[in-house]
Length: 498
Image (cartoon, rainbow, N blue to C red):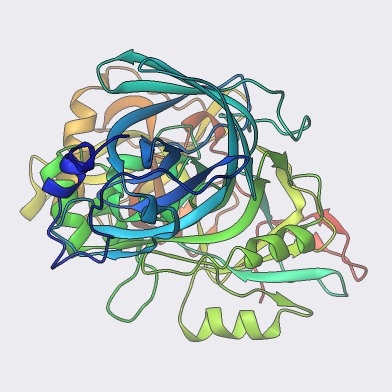
């Protein structure tokens, strides 16, 4: 029989006057039973992981599994061999104090019995019979305390599969007025960065609209992955910074968007925290939800109860949208989005099943050049020359000087220095003289009052750089007219009515 010294490592790592974990007791033979017991604990320590513990010779042989127990034989997961634990740990769950070994919350994720086919120093083969996990698994050592865990049986759910890793968000069509009639749901339009959130094994990966991984820039959002734990989920939402009046501020968000230094990222996460505002669910536990109607996707999203310090699932309104529109006007928000209750999710497509109704005109433009400033801006950027794609031609749309700040100008000067050119990238429109040209690779967002007959914008104001947008996709947004029955018809470019 093993003796207590086999739990000496467990005992040495813990102060049992501070931690609620069970103290080390002498290893002992379990009462006779047909099958040994196991437990899987979800452990929110410095990083989320799952602890697999198998009853063996009066103790619990233990492995930390960072991404959880695999459900598919195609994917092996890392398993790190840790110290043996006492049998009392089969039922332990609680809060290990911060500063103690393994500090954080621990709960029982699964429990049951298992049969052993092989159990030696380099390989363990067992069949688990749990409440969640069922099937034959093998753990095998690769080097030192590094092991892998592999599912030997076919997946229990043969239709389960991983989501594509290159999903693009579904986009809304600009509408001249709100749609009438039944069958619509209403959401506020958030002024932030659109991001698809992939959650797997308690980790989240955030991908912007143009396919860039932006996860490391928003460390406060990582805990959303831990909140979902072992769930396999793909979310759609907007990363938003709020000002002191709790209104979305793209100007504040600009300070978070282009930072590369880890120390600066950590500092700004404290000074300008962001929230991930969730409004759609694309994948859940190995199955696509994109073919489901919007109403069902929203229900499943709501059932996940994702409301935390750095993420939220705002309510939506079903009906005429009057309440949502009133809120957007009262708080001077960008506008609202109306979505057909029966609409499926169409990744990467701009659909008329989703309509955006803006309180003021604003859209993205491609920068094709700049004009030097005067007085306080002599020698620096005074205004930007912006345009939009019309087929294969970049159409000049006007100059934007209002709203440019010192920080934005410094970032623009850095970007322009890498993309100077001698000739104009604009193929249509009247471009002023005495300007400097750049490659049409930078996208900015601009607010303005109206379009002129020649295709220029009036009274523009710079809102920020959009590194999340592909310049090739920037076109002039033309609002559609909404018929009495809710059908859409291409309209002119009047200011949207709300």
